Image (cartoon, rainbow, N blue to C red; front, side):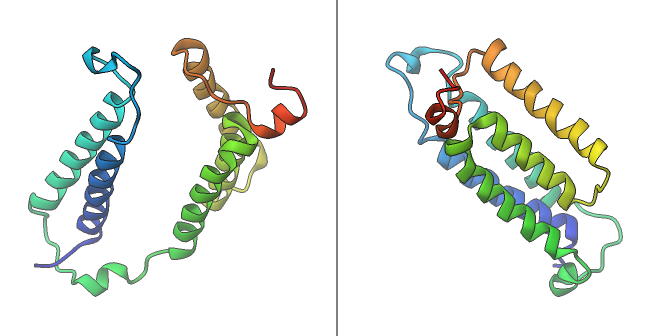
Amino acid sequence: MTLSKEKLGALCFFILAIAYGFEAQQIRLLPGDQFEAFTARTMPYALAWLTGLVSFLVLVLPQKGSGETFTRVFQGLNWPPTILMMVLMVLYGLALTPLGFLLSTVLFLIAGIYTLGERRWKIILLTAVPSAVGFWFILVKLLNVYLAPGEIFLALNLGA
């Protein structure tokens, strides 16, 4: 069996979906939530199942005219941006507590967009800032999800 780039990506996403589903079990529920139809675990479970299903289908369904071997899948890939994006994701996770959701998300999006090749700062800022603010607005104002402002803002007494 040969492994194409698409199949390798599907395999990675399948493994990620399984790990994400197991980690979603660690989300704590409030007392009485086990009787609710929609809890803090519902969306992570849905995302894990949907990702797992789609990636499994890509893995098992035949692909047209693919003659690539396992080692040829990795040749010619652009690894530096991929590795840098993974480092940025780890830094984003570490920055959430001290900087808060909004500031760390804006910085992550700016760095990620720049890493992926966009060099026009007007485009970068007009993409990153409204996306982060819009997502923050949906979570905080529409869905009533509490997002901590960040330790830096609490220390400056701006978050209260």
